[in-house]
Length: 278
Ligand code: AMP
Image: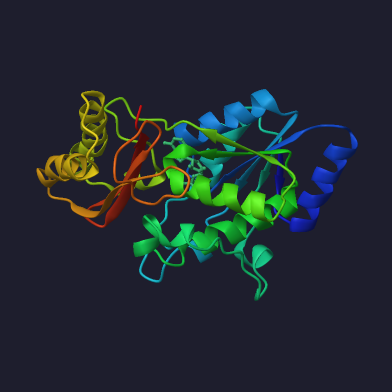
């Protein structure tokens, strides 16, 4: 497994792979890998000749009062996990390698202002800019993203369509802990008590699905039930919204395929989760 730190070296590696007729799969991550990340890696290894995992805690997607400095990092552990999964290369650039006083940014308008974008107004511009850069550096045939970050997936899909990136996006299902909590590097911040309480998110989403399954189509009623569920814990809701899964706009009546998405703080830790109504 190659550890590549330079942009030029990564581009050369990808050029060689392409010249040999090998397909490249890219899994962009911020490291501190868990089973959620590894599910994307396994999919890439299965579908592509050469799998590249990028590990970069991207500063431009963090707001001024967010957790950039405390974001968990453990490269040696990540390296072992990637090796075990038969990853071909890790792209592990330093910040100075990725950003040289840039004046160019990629912004997907409108979609980036909804849901998470309301409380994190600069977040998605940071994400789309770094992902566009990674696409140009790694030149993957396929790129793998988790549907845990559903809005991120929708926004990147729009960017790929709008800017004609020549690659296929693959969305992978949410991987959960045994008790239903969606896996996240940020779960690491939770105190034992917060960790216990955080299972409410998946339970609340299940409740929403159950109501829809029994014929409830009114988004206000379902949203209220979800908020009531969460209110039984000492958490702070950022948002709970029921939206169209492409436009991310609120719906008047819930239909199959609509999305319920939420963000909730447990202490200082902001967790997100979502589910498509079925
Ligand atoms: P991150 O390191 O948090 O930026 O995540 C890197 C990629 O892993 C993103 O595409 C995430 O959506 C995906 N991911 C993170 N957690 C999960 C999970 N629990 N299930 C599936 N995918 C995930």
